[in-house]
Amino acid sequence: MLESMRSAPPISLSAGRGLARYLVGRVLRSRLGPRLGDRPAVYLSHFVVHGRLPNLCEQKTFSERIAFRRLCPQAIFTPLSDKIEVRSYVKDRIGEAYLIPLHAVTSDPERFRFETLPPSYMMKANHGCGWNEVVRDAAPADVAVLRAKARSWLDQDFARYKRERHYGGIRPKIMFETLLQDEGRVPKDYKIHCFRRNGQLRQVVQVHCDRFGDHRVNFFTPEWEPIPFSHGYASAGLEAVPRPANLDAMLGLAGRLADPFNYVRVDLYSLAERIYFGELTFTPGAGLMAFDPAAVDAEWALHFDPDPTFFGDGAAVAGPNAGVQVEATA
Image (tube, rainbow, N blue to C red):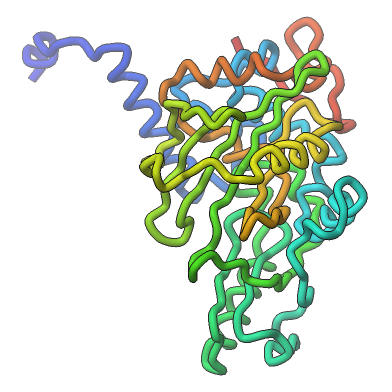
């Protein structure tokens, strides 16, 4: 036994790191994961995805800057991440015409009268991401399922999943919007990354096709030149993602909504050349999206000014939120 162990080939650095990432991932998904504090959870989840601990002092990658925001969000992130509260901001900035019509809002799905809604609509939770339910021609039997789903959303603290602290201050509610449809499907989702460095705006357009079916994602420059880049989804053929006739208008609206920020992603829809606002996202994917090629992670960080970090002598002495402390890592 001992002899065979001595003769075994050494574990390579890459293989050892891969094993470590696997084991840490198991810990985060275990019962221990939710018990971890925000700081270790952010550091370890970053390590699992990117293969290294985040350096929150230097923040040389986009993912590290998002990791910092998870722990030290600016106060304004909370109301603008609330899918209901953000509507006031959008109305003031670009006008009410860009808002998807809102049928109703409730915090008590058990008592809510679903029969007052139109046959088709979109049910969402306002305090997180991914909590969407497309409802087409709802039958009475569907209501019980919808009530249960809405209640489960309200009972969850989205901020705890990936430790995006700014979601924790949102009062959970259920909202019912008009269902946007493009030939029976949810329309393309134009996620416009708005970077600002030294006052100069730079944009990258991320297009999601058929989000609830054969989900494909493409990236483009503002001139609609394809960017060979992926976050893990397969891309659609270019013939399926033509340049929108109102692209310039979408870019302009996104820029106006993003004007106060060094970085934010502005999600828009275009239906029959009419533009609708989706949401603002300050920590897309919680910074836990693999970049392919990996070099783009560092390139995106160069596009915008970092958030104030207030580090001194290797430790955080203050931050955008009072009382938040973030240790630096090498």
